Length: 441
Image (cartoon, rainbow, N blue to C red; front, side):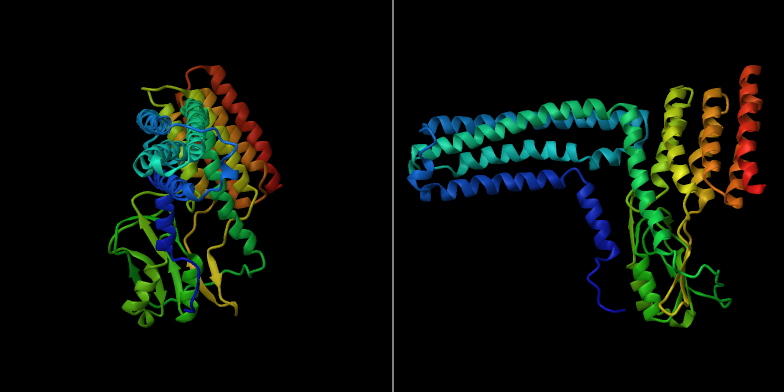
C-alpha cells in the first residue's frame, strides 16, 4: 500500500478518547497558566519605562496577596464545580441513561470551565513561586496585579455561566436536543457517503464462492473507527476482495472474524495485521462514526421514561418527535452502498452497513413495546411512521414501515383500556393506509 499521511484508525481512536476526556482540556489550561505567568515574570525586568508608565505602582505585598487569593479561591471553586459535575453525572446515569454520560464528559463548557479554574490556580501558584519582587519595578508589579485581577474576573464570569449551563443541561429536553444533534451529525456523515457514490455503478456484484481467509479480532471491544478507505487501499494493493463483517458500533469478539478475504492464500499474517490496523477498538461506542448510537440513546431514554418507576410518557413523546426527524431524514435519502470498487470498476470491498430496517426497528420497536398501553405514545409512533412513509417512494421501505405500523397498532389495541383510545389508533392507521398506498398505486 502506498505511503499516506492519513492517520491510522488507532491514532484517530486515540485522538477521540483524549479530546473527549475530562482531563485533557483542563491540563492544557494548567500548562497555559504556568507558561503565561512564567513569560510575564521573565520579561518583566526588560520592559521599558515607557511601556510601564500607564500602570500604577503597586507594593510587593499587594501583588503577593492577590496571587495567593487567586490560587486559594480558584482551587475552592474548582472543587465545588467538580462536585456539581459529579452530581449531574450521577443523576443522568440513574434517571436517563448511563451511556449518555459521555456527552457531559465531552461538553466543551464543562471542560473549559474546569480548565479555566485550574489554569487560574496554576497561574497564582506559579506566580507566587517565581516572583521576586525586589527584581522588578513597582509599575511592573502594578501590571501583574492588573493581569491577576483580569484572570479573577474571567473566573467569576465562567463560574456564573457554568451554573447557568448546568441548570440547563440537566433538563431532559436539553439532553434530548443534544443527543439529537449528535445523532444528526453522525447520520449526516453517514449519508454523505451515498452522495460520494452516486457516480459508481450500482449493479450488484457477487462475492467469490471459494472459502475465504479470515482476519480475526485480537482484542474485545466496540469498533470505534473503521477506515474504509484504508481497507480499500489494502485490497487493491494486495489484489484482494474483502467482505467486512463488523462495522463501526459492532462488538469485536476475540477470535471472531472482522472480515473475510479472497483469495485465502494471499492472506498472510503480516497482511492480516495490516487489516486489523484499519480498526480501532475501545470500551464503548462513539457518536462520531456510529449513525445508530444517538438514535438508540434517544430510544433508551424513552423506554426508561415509560418504565413503572418513572412513568413519564411526555418524555417518551419528546424523544419520539426527535427520532421522527432523524427517520424522515434517513427515509428521504439513499443509504451508502455496501460495495466499494477500484479504479477499474472491479469489486474490492463489501461492508455490512446498517440499512433502513436497522434504523427504524432499533429506534422505535423498544418504545412501541414499552408504550403500548399509552395512547399518546402509540399515536406519536404512528405519526412518526406516517411522516417517514410520506417522504419515501421506495417500495421496500414502505413495506417495512407498514409492517411496523400494523404490529404497533395491533399491540396497542390489545392493551389500551378505553374504546376512544382504540378508535384513535384505528383512525391513525387509516391515515397511514392513505400515505403508503401512493407508492403502490
